[in-house]
Image (tube, rainbow, N blue to C red):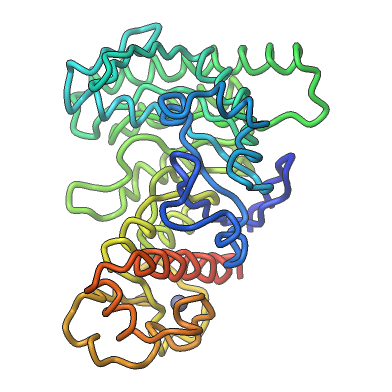
Length: 360
Ligand SMILES: [Zn+2]
């Protein structure tokens, strides 16, 4: 069992799930809703917050915690992945160079220049508790030369992030500093994944994320790359499985030593009427990789029109404790906004319960 993750805004027992409040909110639910169902920490995205509302607005509000009324730990993702994927989809949106990333806002033409130093400074401005280095993403299918370049830049940028982090701490004389995590790249190339992990660990960070696409071509968890990275990092270091969120994938990655998870999947699925439920026969045991412990509920299916039981017997979420599957089916059918909200709270409560089981 890994050590709890100690942050300046509280200690997280691990493994822990941090929902994606990308733009300082989890769609359709409030921070109070999240507290009530047992969520302890959140992930925001520094790049998206830079675009809107802007770091100065958040800073003037008294920091990200005040701005969104959240007193628990907040991890701010640098946004390296998002910038990379936007530019990859449309090269007119910007360019990634050795020393900086330039992004153009398609609607306004506004230009953002991201450097390792700026990204760390931005996360200090937000008041994040866990700062994430800017990394240079690659696609798992990119040729090895691209992967090499991505690893080389990622390590160089991480060193600059670490130096900027230390400079910021020295100038702010903060009693209670945030943590800083680095992100490991290297695609599906074992030597590069290991080399990147070892190089980042030599610089020294409080935790490490698995970067890049975490799934194999067939949609299964990329077990080997995850294992190479976990094996190459210090055993006691917190390991963040960025973007890994399907319940069976979470169980697989937790078994490999990953202890921090964030993913938009449960909330996005909820808004589309896809809910998760433990199988009735599972009865609260701790799942191991490969165990069939849950089922997916597609609430739009016609059968739910007359299903007057809860989505999951025994679930104590605001949906299941008061409403039937038939009612949720109806709310989705008539386009009532509370449908997405109730489904989101159910799915997040499912994750809280799953992680309680994984902690044993
Ligand atoms: Zn429920």
